Image 1 (cartoon, rainbow, N blue to C red):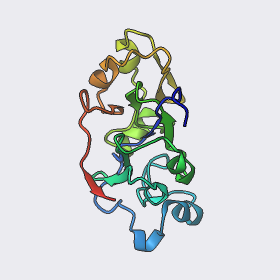
Image 2 (cartoon, helix red, strand yellow):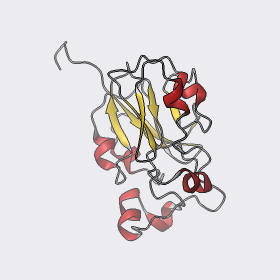
Image 3 (tube, helix red, strand yellow):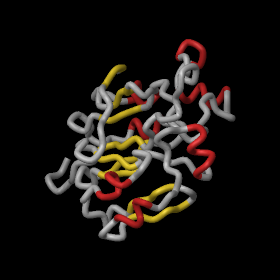
Image 4 (tube, rainbow, N blue to C red):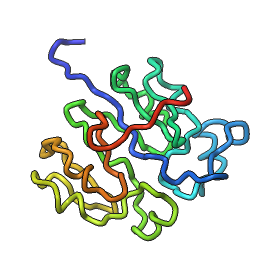
Length: 186
């Protein structure tokens, strides 16, 4: 690796807020995420956009940098992550993306459902209310396909979007503006 190469890290764009008692996938029944998607294209959770939580990304990571949190969704340990992209390739839903640590604020929901539908199935999903857009001093956020999208080139990482989001759908890596979940499963 060259010296001019900037560090990259993975972010998971789902908080796992759609899980309720009985909605947690059973690994013995479904195997891993890819198998679950192949066998059940309609989905196995109420939110068809969210993290399945069966650990395909965890298995792909060679550095133990990704894990399943208490909420049942994948989470990244940025101190271990090198941004290799193996987890990105392993996620059948395309929920993981690579970014630079300089952009610690990110939308943690990719649902394109209308706000009422998202609210019905997820307690942390983006409902496209626009509070983040209204409170961003850098005009770095827009609502697209019923979800918040942040332009990292414009973002100044002030955290106002995360603070003002009524659903917790915008996260920050450092946990300054939002609370991170504890690691429970490797």
